[in-house]
Length: 68
Image 1 (tube, rainbow, N blue to C red):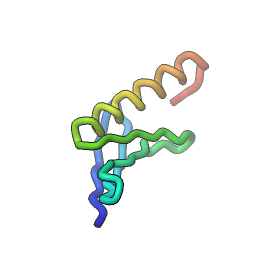
Image 2 (cartoon, rainbow, N blue to C red):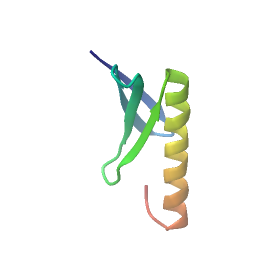
Image 3 (cartoon, one colour):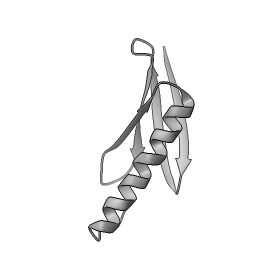
Image 4 (cartoon, rainbow, N blue to C red):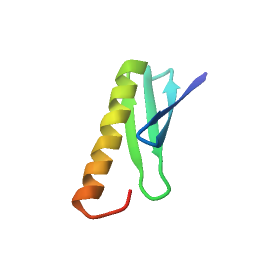
């Protein structure tokens, strides 16, 4: 069984799937250029991880003068 969760933050879309065997959500930020992953054991942790991943990505882009 797979449960898919979609979320949005600062204009970025995140998609995550729940893996029953691991009892974990594994997700990725939908981005045309880079691979950005996040994970969590419940929806609250998943959302926090997604926000941290996007914030971190934006920080790295700003530090490197790269367009996100």
